[in-house]
Length: 283
Length: 170
Image (cartoon, rainbow over all chains, first blue to last red; front, side, top):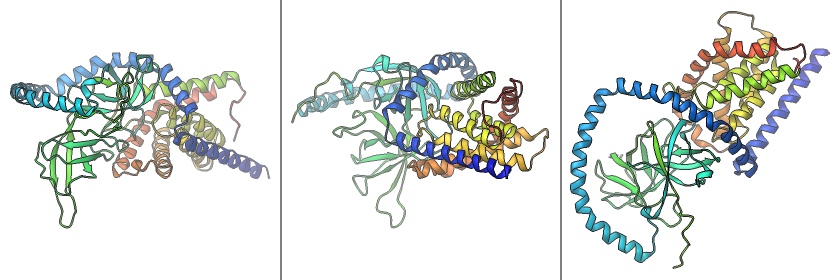
């Protein structure tokens, strides 16, 4: 009889915990304000410790990278020097085209990435969980960062701010299955949305605007200029790795790699996008 | 009783801080250990299913505050794991040297499977990925390793405190 009572009590308690958990999951799935505030407070408490730990781990990480990646860094240095020379030449060619595009964008009243100001931040750590692709940065709402702001480096798009506290923010990376980026292909002009799979650092393109685009290997992809887009237009995203079309398929499977090494981020820039100081224009 | 509660609170806070700071830098093949989940398993092993479930719920909730997945998902997975391990140990297991690692690994595996299944049903379809099977296995091996340190920590909190109890006895 005693055993029966104890067992019943345990099961009742477990049932209560399960129901409470499910209620919380349901509430938070609707992006609840109280839960967001709780999360922000928790992050505020822990962000000083995160910065300290990151400082402590930084020399160790640099030393390990220096030892294990010396030859690849040397090769990369030589390759980058060649690329800089090529890019200088390309920059001169595109300068003229860029000014024409700028004039047209002004005429059409389209927002541009050049108009967005940024906040530099340091990456203080990765996700504490196993099933998400996020990084933590050391700047938050106290520096004007808001949920939804895009995050970039000098190489291209990194991700989007998904949680923010006063002293830090969480950035969901573009290779997370939770994020899709509207992109346009540089030369074949088609537009599409990136799709990520868990564990795969390469992305695929879905919702292609053209059923059979003439895609070339190495072709660059930029964020597309769509009204109310989550990302500013013309930010480099990736380059085409392969394009294969299986028999009977309507569209090819285009695989891309991100331009930014998302597994090795140190510093990023958070863009104020859409610019809070800009006023919406009609037309 | 107060002393014991403080010790258990200290266990949760210190493990959450370690999980969100130090272990984000100690990822092995993409996997990190679930320190609070292992602590839940340790609690269930020491105190039984009711204490395991309650501790798991509290520890999971604290962990959820730092994840992008919905609040309550880890709490649910950890509470069920704590209850299950508590039932299992009260019926079958006897003290042995490698028990912390075995239970830590198995508990980590079960907890993560529950997390993925419930999360997937709750609308996070991205959790249903083949790659996550690999991550669960690696994470459970990591859990087995950290259990060697986490189990004595939890034991310290529940055994060396005063005679009172913060959690109901099984």
